[in-house]
Image (cartoon, rainbow, N blue to C red; front, side, top):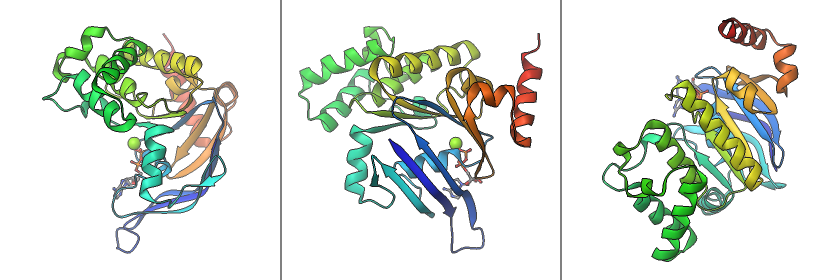
Length: 259
Ligand SMILES: Nc1ncnc2c1ncn2[C@@H]1O[C@H](COP(=O)(O)OP(=O)(O)O)[C@@H](O)[C@H]1O
Ligand SMILES: [Mg+2]
């Protein structure tokens, strides 16, 4: 569905502080797959995801190719990328749960997005947002709540509901469980798994958490310093990592799991 080929991302290319955040990486996201992009903070994960959606910050430059269903989208006009983000490839940005406006109820924020992007009427948007909250396993009453009245996990569920509002094909979730407690993290991952199954979604889970990604994803891409150092089926990668960095991550994971 998406093929990333020889992608490099550089920030401030013309200044002395030029930094290659992503270095010539290639990978493919298959339809209906649940793939994990893992790596330590600063390894370039968010740069990859933002570039895939045409959301590179100022000062960022990308080279290479990103094909969506065979069609080049790297450098595509903003109008095309906007349509793609709204209807096909939905992003749950890093920190999404904290990006709700504090002065509006969750339901109102969802209805506004649905009306704007789907051209829905107020009553259609009301119905759709209730449906989405239910799909994200939130009580209908969550619609009437302000963001500060919800727990972290509930806010993340609302962010996921919001990301699903235009029935996307793929969900790119950037650190969706960071800052949540372990039990809530697991619940959010189960929610993503269920939504993926029921809606035939393609999910790219971006995280620094190897154990979590390994338990949820079929396939893992391991990034370090802007490069993909190892990739493969989760089980294989955990049982017999080949790259030194992956070996270290797996060793740390096994140490922590010991009772
Ligand atoms: N807007 C930016 N301007 C300059 N450098 C950036 C910017 N965003 C990220 N970087 C740098 O790019 C590298 C990768 O960052 P990022 O993609 O956010 O990694 P991750 O998501 O894995 O933590 C880091 O060294 C970071 O400092
Ligand atoms: Mg990041």
